[in-house]
Image (cartoon, rainbow, N blue to C red; front, side):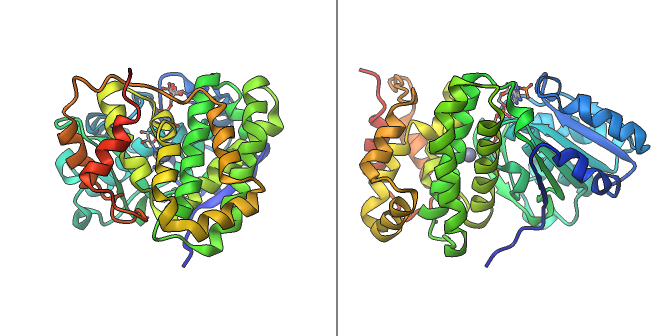
Length: 364
Ligand code: NAP
Ligand code: ZN
């Protein structure tokens, strides 16, 4: 079954093409963004004149940090209600897009931080226009919001069809200002999503051609993009791959591949994409015996053997080693095994297997 209620605009004229639809969203937008990327990406410079010409008022909430937490959602909700906004425009990577989704629900249903994860309290939402400036999360086409609980410091996502963005405006031009580090990490996040579209027990064969195309786009364009950050065709290709990754996980959700990275992000600040990337090889090897047919079809379609693919992966600086000495490994294992991503993994690891995978990145 396929379901995607987001209207998608892709390429160099995406914002202009979406203009008439933005006008239908409301009269006053809360623009949700981080400190600098809405400017650096060039989105604001193109968007603000359009809003002005169309008579759409706005208020800017630029308080979204990387890996947003519940406090940030409350601040955004308060500003949305105080300013009398009636829709949201999220500009940035996954962090602002996920924050905007939670702000939409919190404002529409008057939810407190503690109530946000209670699905029974989510009755309505405000429309969201998503303009990604990284090529990683695909959050512009997913129903997920991943937040860190301010009290527990646990990073956990939730999903609701109410927070699928109404419009996704995906243009690689807005990603040329990314540093090479963020370009690499976010591409690895997109790669994880595409692979998880195959790994997940909720895999949908109708999506396989899109997934293999997305992986091939990353293989063909990532090195090129890192060498020539301003080369637009490579950015557009990576933006498209990221969009495809988002469409994939909107249907299949993410797996252990994501769950294992979350504590590294909250405890050590490892960027989300890198937290996935450092376990890509291990998770593929762990899952492989359970999904032989799916993987052989995947590698046939992308025209590489599994070993060639892993060698390509190893050519990037993603092999982070971490001193695990000070962490409460058993708590992490419990947290990962209890995460919602685990049940749809093709193999559910035992605590012993999980410990072994985590220890593979131990610093000597
Ligand atoms: P991000 O946290 O949104 O941004 C990372 C950094 O890149 C920030 O410093 C940001 O600056 C900067 N940046 C963004 N765009 C830029 C641009 N065009 N030029 C220069 N700098 C730019 O990174 P992300 O990897 O895209 O998002 C990660 C978050 O998304 C995580 O919380 C993850 O869990 C979540 N996620 C959600 C989904 C989903 O389906 N909802 C899927 C995967 C991941 P600013 O601070 O100024 O913005
Ligand atoms: Zn991700």
